[in-house]
Image 1 (tube, rainbow, N blue to C red):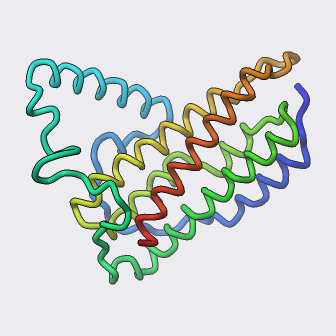
Image 2: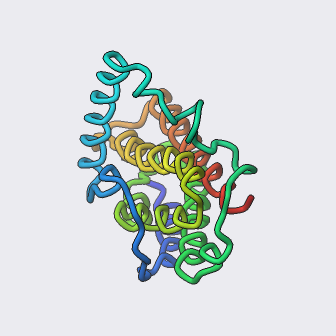
Length: 207
């Protein structure tokens, strides 16, 4: 496989800013308690199966409190309710900085792929996007939002974790076999989706 070492090394070097930090206790669902990408995909698949069953047997229960009716999610960042004291706290500000850096790294990966369609993004993904730390940063920042807003941001957090896992799978390529145009297009689509999810999530903190 042809690898643009300069791009990979440059991207990997930019990840050094993500030093481990102490996080406050944050209430999370069992979906976010998974420790590996594989666990996450297995659990989200199970969740979708269960949700599908509920929507068939009890449609009013499955749809309650999501997009319509009382307790619906806040999907517009402009309507987000933020606790300014929590947002200004040290751990949350560090999480905001880290999440902003993650979004920037996604942009760098897109540029690297545009310059070299055969670049291996695997080392950058594994070093920069440590699954447990990424999840902790997202949840720490999420703690600054009220419950209604979190119903919307939770959706984005799930999307980010899933998009990142799918990107890692799409990046995998057998040794000696060049990446086809179809696979390159698929990777670009995954990167665009991941970047969009990060940007949308950050809008809630900047509203």
